[in-house]
Image: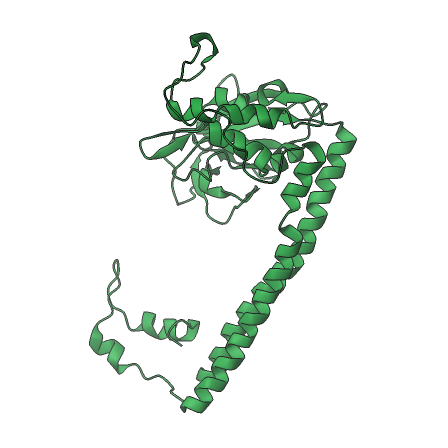
Length: 323
């Protein structure tokens, strides 16, 4: 009952203060709440949980579509087994490492580096590095953004806007539009449709390297923890790259390359540029993209039904108690 929107409004209306809201005990104690008999309470709870169970069932059905989808896509382009590749290096850190073959001297990197060959050898199609596929790349802006949108300001995408391979525009900050341009390049930091954004820094090791495609017609720029890539679309489609960036095929490479410092996990542009992908023909890429989104759309039908059930559970509960 206390989680309901109606009760929360009663609480909000009972608070005092302009900047920091305060609820005094006397105010809380004076709020009257409807308390039916235990038998009626149980009936209301049974109906409430039945709706939540229906939501859980829809989520389960949605997961049946989405679970394994990325592995299925990966299997189309790679023979990599559907499990974390084993470290082929010796378990001892006391090893003789040829200086000329060492790119980075961190023990953790040296121990894991053997995993990369397993991944590269699994490719079914011609191999390309991100650097081979890009026409240009650019770090985002290191300018303090504002929550308030004033005249002459445009929204800036940050790493928090990149979620599950997509861009979430629900929470935005803003920058003066002239920050995103130079005299020689007026559109330098303005995003175009098809731009690939990848997170180069994150506090979570599982979120470093998360990526998304910008497909909006609106004017946006992007922040410094993101790097923008524009690909040669005669070789590779951005949507195909984005899908692969969610698969173990790429996530394993990122796990080897990422480094930690100052409480953050980082990838630099050289490390991102060294990520390798199997790249089939454009028609095959389009088939893979269609396969991914068709399955994702089927899953979304069940996820939407689950959300509807969750909302109905809360609304019906409030009607029983407060109407």
